[in-house]
Image 1: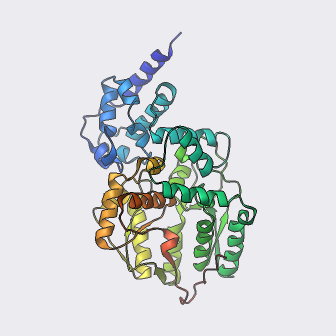
Image 2: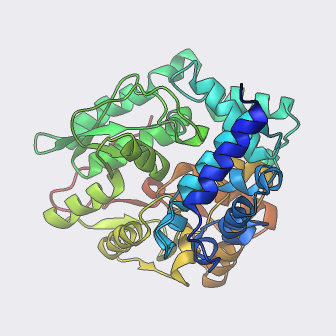
Image 3: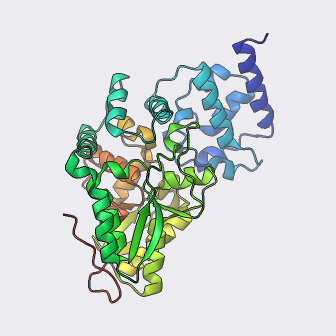
Amino acid sequence: MPTCADTLVAELEKLAEECRLCYQCGQCTSSCPNGRDLSRGPRRLVRLVLAGEIEAALASDDLWRCTGCGACTDACRMDIDVAGVLARLRALERANGAVRCPERSAAEVKKRRLDRYRRIDNLVFGATMAGRGHVPRDLVGAAEAGFKAATQVLPRRRGAAAAAARRAATAAGPGGVTLPFYAGCSLPQDGALHALVHEVAAGFGVLLDEAPGAGCCGHPSRGTVPSYFRPADLVFTACPACDASLEKAGIATAPVWGALTERARRRGLALRGAAPAFVPYVGCLAARDAALAALAEAGDLAGVEMRLDFPSLHSACCGALGGMYRGATSGSLRLLRFAAGQGAPLVSPCVLCRDNLRSAARQLKLPVPVYFWPEFFAVRRDTPGGCDPCPTT
């Protein structure tokens, strides 16, 4: 009967065979949005697989700093599924390893939660991480997130999102459209921001119809979790991670911010921005070129300038699940310094990215405001054909 060690060796040999064509050019690591923060990176992990160094490969924190964006696979000149190799190494590490970096712990905590419940609870997640010895680098941000999540369980706050949706329906008016909307896990735990999303959409004449009980998309778990969301048609998302994860599950998705911008352009609506210029950050899981183009178009409609440095800086990893525990990444540091030099705020289509960059700005003591898309853009109230956003109170 084969032992666990025999099984491990057999799996490693399969991985090595799939990687035989690798000639260590380094394109996978250079394309990685998290590459500047990795000690080994995809290239060296593949090299360890080829050399049969399974213990060294499974002991690397870099396995858990992979967000699964697939950039390494896309860049590989030999058509090796590098991201798939890393995913299978993580599965082997789960069964045989003992890595205890923040990303690994976060993945384990979230998977266990999602195996039993539909959504991630930020309060439970934070408490469990603390119990495993992982303390947030940004205590202010952690306290803010905990407070927002805690207020959502109060009776007077439970129906806030539904009330916002009803006000949004009124504001959208008879000429409005309804879009099926997937809010994910993070957004509903910030009641004010959740309501703002509905109300900003209403200014475009759009009612966001949320799927009840949709559950978490499962992406942050780094593993297979039950799916509670199976729509028949296209669904609009407010999070690049949700967008990527649902698409992997075969669900057709589109970013809601791009849909709002497209509607504004077709209807001749003018937007307003919270500042005369901004620096974009689209995160590592968004389709970078498409996301940057959508932000640029929103900027044009608002009459504000989008300021760019080298393209990959605007999709460098913010730290993802480990952001609050690891602190500022190299990408965050460079991006915030660029924004500070431009005297412009950052704008992101992702709540997690916004929170991680805000934490990084506090840690680095850089006075750079960081906005979530609907906190920065909205339809101008004096726009013919537009709808006034309804009040949040």
